[in-house]
View 1 (cartoon, rainbow, N blue to C red):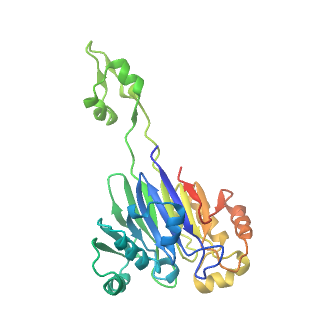
View 2: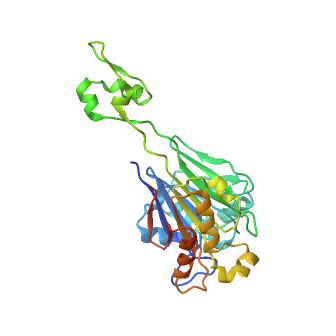
View 3: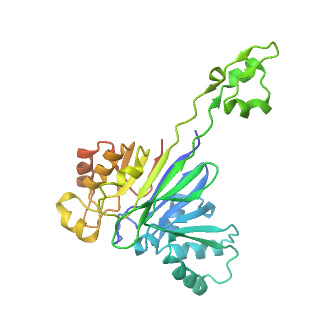
Length: 305
């Protein structure tokens, strides 16, 4: 099975602490690297993680609060110093484009690579990136400013052909893709070997959803049905319900409710308020609703499986 991992770089909220950094993650799927949010200090965290961050091909920014985007211009500048030539694609709310262009004119003159901006309509659920093996969709969220999450989905793959069947029936390489696409095999003697004997089922497509800053949305689970791994902000616990409502954030109970209703495989909490010295209360609250809940933490690698 091809690798599909999420590297947590920062899972704190707006106020940085000595324990948690601002929001940033790297999604590594089949060797392709995507940065999701880019809070202050992200490039330092990338170096500490030993991720080859020059391989990042796309950056997805959920919204224009500083703890989710202040690190972007610094990282672009560093890419220039390192001699990057490959384009960098940025997917973000449209309001970021003029700000980013002005910053690059001021601080990044003479870049040898292009920064390609893709405006994301945060109010619409739609495909914003696609290649041969992956689709990324926007997830409309409800925050104090335009905001969306991102859903990374593998495309369905072909069945696996059994190596012992290739050897037993001397199947040439030229016919392997035909068999993966459903063809039977006919031997020189005229025996028809059914496709079901030649192959094993394809791997189940995996998915990862990143739900950034948002208040609880009762219908959100409909867009996340059967997601393999869900990251959902859980800034507060229920004892701080009023603060969550005031600032359009979620509690751990809210996040777990979304995971339960979506029938997610697992839930990772994050975007913790600086008021918590540890997050065990958040975890306990989430597990009362959705037992397969976990705390995210800096340096953690999540295997999406």
